[in-house]
Each structure stands twice: as structure tokens, then as C-alpha cells.
Image (cartoon, rainbow, N blue to C red):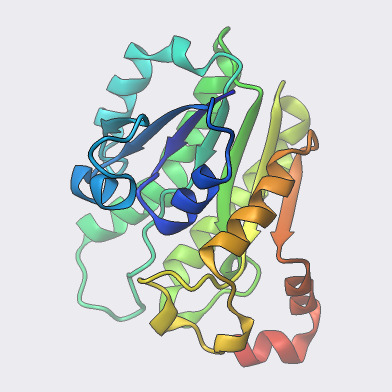
Length: 227
């Protein structure tokens, strides 16, 4: 099986890849060769392609030159920009980058894959539990993830391959562990990867929540505690 992963230099993706069969053909796209080497080593058999997903122009150039590589693959979009907080001292460039990475690029990617003849078997978008419970501290990220979830849910019947969004709960990565409001709610990257793979093996389109217990967020008092 071929896997093409956008935004692949993070601990969750590294854990997912560690659980894939050794025979898997994996292409990773990201903007940091240094992070790739830190996660997978210099002698990794994974193909790494440097690509800045905040740049629409660079993304379009890559897609137009590589449309055939997606044939019968599983495409995973895990890139995100999370760090912009309400009332932060940011400029329009930061906002545009956030919109591009969290919504515009995956939208263009899904549109491109739907129109071309060499289509994947699956498209998987890594969403976030904050799409269900928007938080003031990362409201841009929350609303952008929620918007793309809505896009998938609305268009899934029009797309000729499996398309799913996986809303991942709090994961104790090196970056996120100090931002989790309640440590007992978090799971390890390896545990998250096992849950993600269960969903990836399905052939059903839609929005899925990992872990299942996060569905308790439908309870108003739980959502209030996490804001």
C-alpha cells in the first residue's frame, strides 16, 4: 500500500508509520528536513519531499507535477497551525498561513484528487477535538478544523473514494503536553496511532472521534470545563 502524508514530521504520524507494514511505500511531505531526520533517521527508506504547505503556489506546483503518484494510495493530511491565540500580536501573514494550512490547502487537495483520473483509495484528514469544543486560546485553529469537517461531511456523497476526518483528542506529544488542561484526558502518540489505524482500515466516509470517550463532549458541563 502507498501512503502519501502531508505534514508528516510530527510524533503522531511517526507512531502511525511505525505500525504500518514494512512493505508500505511511504512519501512524506513537510517543510522541515531536520525534523524528518530527528524522527526517522538519516537512513530511513521513507521518501521525504520538502514542501511548505502555507504556500498555495508551492502546493499547486507540486500537485501539477505529481498527479500520478496518488493512484490507489491512501492520502493523509495531518498538517496544522495551532499556535495563534486570540489577541496575540500577529499580522495578516500569520492569519493567512493558518487559513492556508488548516483549510485552503486540504480543500484544494481534496478537490484536485476528486477531479483527476489517478485517484486515491482514501483521503484522511486529521482534525481535532477542538473542532467540537472551540477554545478561546486557539479559536482560529478550532474554527478552521470545524469548517473542514463540515466540508467533508457535506461533500462525502459526491466524492468517489473514501473520505474521512478523524477528530483526535489530547495527545501527549512533546509540543502539546504542556497545553493539555487535564492530563488524565490525554493519550500517548502510540495509543492515538492505534486508534487512527482502526479508522483508516474502514471503508466508510464521515467524521470519527478518537478515543470514543471523547463523545462525552456532547455533555454541556464537560464542554464548559475544557473551554
